[in-house]
Length: 322
Image (cartoon, rainbow, N blue to C red; front, side):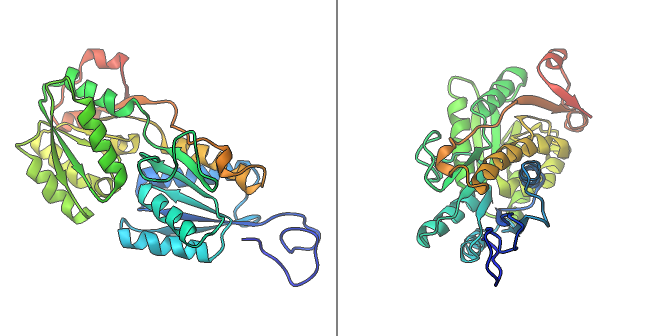
């Protein structure tokens, strides 16, 4: 949204003689949890480094849906009606709602997404290398993350059954579950799945996996991750190794994850947003990007709490945190 004054001016802002364009970026974030919060901060950091300073030439409108599917569409419609310059959609449901909103309103507002597992399956872009005219962004699923985790569970543990919690209402979670199932083909592992609709369902679903699963594997499902401490406590009480799909969850107390820093992912997204806000490029100029620097991180305290003995060969494979 370009801020204009009442007087005659030659610049884009309406501030006579300033020559500086002021922009408004709307943030549609599905829920507040560490990974998504870090992605948002990464975006702001990149934009500031590229000359967009909050309070000077950029304003942020921050809205969280609090993991409520109904809220995301209300937020998306609000952002479009406010005529913002760019929408930063953080997580798959928010990205889908934002894209639907600009399509229905026939608005030409760039939507730059992040923390999206399967941008193609979510209907955001035709292909990773074929962004739409007004939509592009970054995916939070490295192609090797889930296969590497499944391989680790298969080769480095005695587990036979992998318990997965997920919200079928999150397209990203459905896609990840299918990837897990594909990754276990050819192994002796089996998937035991339990679905949830809200964070209030997570405890009961996790408890129902006790006795059915040898390990838990929580991917980047926003609903489950928002109630992660509940799953961690059950895993500790029952001595069940808990793997996750992001490094922030390892910091919170899961055993291990192949992942990356969400702040870096948000930063990469911010660099794209900066070029678009400057008017130099359009979303269609940027292919959807994958995260970089995939690594295995193991939480030593979590291992002890879950009764997992650390193997000497893991030292060459992983980075340890206390």
